[in-house]
Length: 160
Image (cartoon, rainbow, N blue to C red):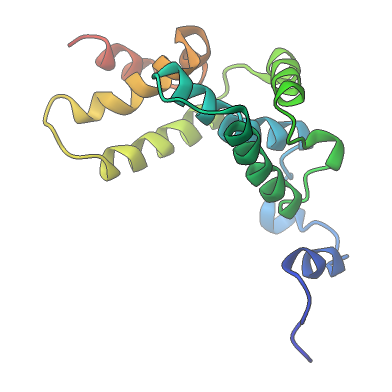
């Protein structure tokens, strides 16, 4: 069998085999994928601006475009991908309203991300393990953060 010589996304589009439920379980729905993608493409530049880092409209949309390409590679439906800042904000707000809520899977995923951050960031005993929670709360706000961070970590972080 010859190796595929085209683009990566072309190789993905050649795969017509059905989803392997036994191996992978149920696939993540398209809105959840788009929402997660927007947490990177939209919220990171917003967070930088929130912290006082100047980010131009061109830089915002360039960053958003990068994540749109990643979404395309992940096979997210084109109508859920945008590199227009205003469209991204509207789409994020719509999906947030419809989909966001507490789930054990969301907490596990967030805690895994926090563990990565704790390993990555410099170790300052008594502070480092609280920093990832504080960063998430700072960017998402207490209401949204409390949906994806365990109650234990929320309490530990805010009892300095």
